[in-house]
Length: 494
Image (cartoon, rainbow, N blue to C red; front, side, top):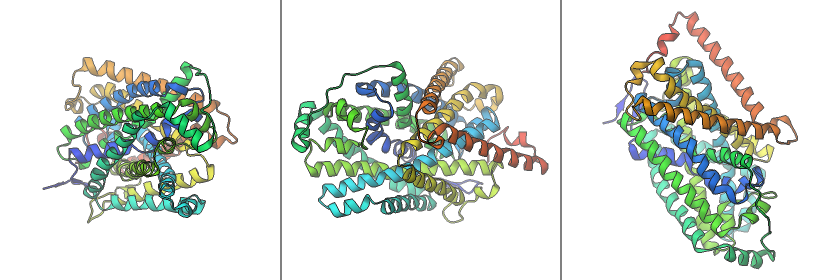
């Protein structure tokens, strides 16, 4: 029997459902697009994408350890907000989690928008050229993106059990079809690709010498770090997990381990077939995807199959990430640092329906922004900034929790020894700060036609707005005679 908490949420998610939430939040555009379009965003990265991936994995693993450690002690809805507000400072907890909410909500919109070209390519591979052309039209693309987004909102609205029933089977299908990419990528090689390119386009693979630079490797790693974002979704569902003290850390470990291995094998397979020189040249003038690149050596029906796998991966992103962002808003409102009405829970489905609708509206703005800006990478940059800040705060929270709230710290069951917590969390915080500095420098020094194409000022403006909301709501609590310190001295109601 599922336990209904005093908040109205129900503990329905088991280990498999939690792991699927994290895995489906991590896979999608990250693996099918970013490792290849990275050649445009970081010119000169060339053959060093895999080393950049490995370097990006280090702070991601350290951040995952921080999340696992904190979730074992504080298994509540809105995980990262609860962690930092109880273990570091209420304001920092709110700002860091608002950064996370904003970044992930933008990512939901971006994923919805980039999903349509994958569907277009699948339709085209089956010979339906007229429909493929129609899907490329602006109003159709935006309309379908909005339809996928709000269908995912509806799935979430009807309960976490409903989300689990959608995510788990599609996760296995996604891995099977992704496995086709890995197998075919290692069967073919650069010579096969060169022959396919000559047959289709009558051109040679460009001859370009690699130009390694540490700054380029760091910039690429900071972007590829976004590929590992998603395991945090597991922590946000802490209020709806069964046996959460054990299941949450285990699900985080499973998600990071499985996805990290899949990322590396997938990317290595594609670059084993497709020369990086070709990817680097074409990325400057057109959007590239893994299925599109392998289409030079595969039969059309195989190309259609892996395009379908990519589309499923993108579709899976949406309900998993919406679950995460809505629980952050719910947790803020429950504590009173956000308008209380946002904490409303549906009487029948036991889900925070108001928070889901508001998160869907933010993602809608991101869909429209991606369309009118003509480049989804602005959304990726915002996501990277947001999550680097959030993960850094989580590592610092591991360091501060025993001093700030020793009673809660005593409940930690993952990395319990302080002699291990301090070096791991410190290294994670330092690496994440390094990545953040490199990412901000790259963004601020990039040449754009208008200031609003830089992600940093947009992110800062949103954080200022969030801060004003926080201070207004806290002032209301104090005016009503509520002991604000008492709210953050213990965990929220279960």
